[in-house]
Image (tube, rainbow, N blue to C red):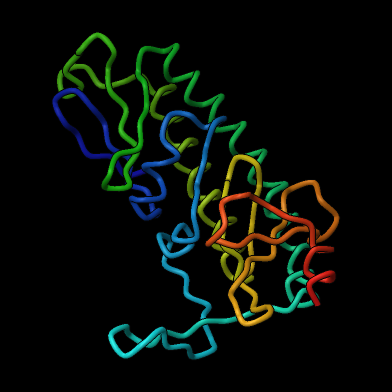
Length: 212
């Protein structure tokens, strides 16, 4: 890894957008990424159908999924979350190793892993031991792999609602309004839906059938 020195920290650049990694920092076993905007923070756009909300709002491209189209994506998303869960465990272990060595690591707003000396040692005068630098490099690789899996999920058109619990939604259109088709890690297929305008959480798809 390429490193740059600071008086009390060592920096490892990360190829991950800063808004995403700022939410992943430190609590690798308690990572949450919420809201439909989360997908856009990593730079993915999958909107295809043109929709206008009125003369004063910009027309945007959106894609609406049928239930069958969304369910086709579930297998790939499940495999990505299999990897993500392992990566989060690895990240936690590496953070713990660096903490125990006296060189805690954090991910800053510039999307870089920074290790610092817990006793304030000037790293220009006393660089971290090779084992610490190797551990920091491994942590960087874990976050980079995590980013790749998140990008793979985004390519399906899904919006990550919660990274910790593995919740992904696909935008759909039903009965004249937008809804979200909801899937959570561990589920075989999509069985729930969500209306952003209503705050009562996921609801079974059978309700949509009943409405029809």
